[in-house]
Image (cartoon, rainbow, N blue to C red; front, top):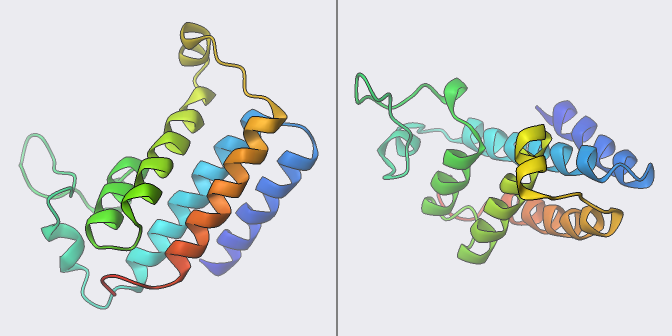
Length: 141
């Protein structure tokens, strides 16, 4: 997992340097998700993940989804619930996730959003702060 995190960090940085703000934002969302997955993988007792109120459930069986089926949204919510990230960090992570989803062309077109290099630079600062918070290993371990 460490090599995945390192590669994603480097790809974020390169996208920003290349002036590719949408690509950078998508990679930042991927980095955030990888950090949350790594944090979940470090838990000695993963049952905490499945007992959280924000745990995603299968609509048919009403049972928690396997971790491999979780997406960024539930990871953010459960990470906040387990105190891995603060309330403000959660709110900012949700915004980063929403902007990452502009990878979908219809969403980008219908919302009239075109990310700028300044947007990507701002998101990079946010991503670095979220990364530090997740790596601090506070909350449930």
